[in-house]
Image (cartoon, rainbow, N blue to C red):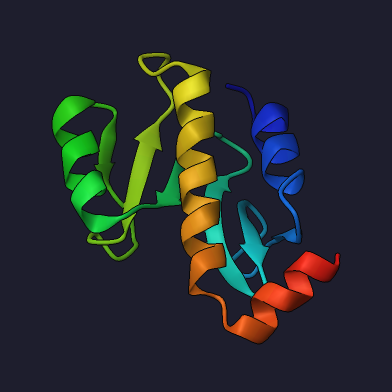
Length: 117
């Protein structure tokens, strides 16, 4: 997976926006102000994704390139090291999972607003 493919995939999600709230190199993808993915846009050696806590533990045990969220809540975030050991298709599924977790946490009004887009 390369930086542009990651960016395009995240931005293709309904209501997703790109932001740089932390610094000039950490790209963040949000829905209704809530983060579902982030990465170092310059180096692009890893990405961080929200994850169901029990699945997060399972993925960390199964894939050495999946570690607890780097500088994030370790219970709810995984960081995926982009070293080629995990297929892009799998990473895209994890991006979908992260997006869906965030969407499911939106208020009814937030979900309605997202549907209207």
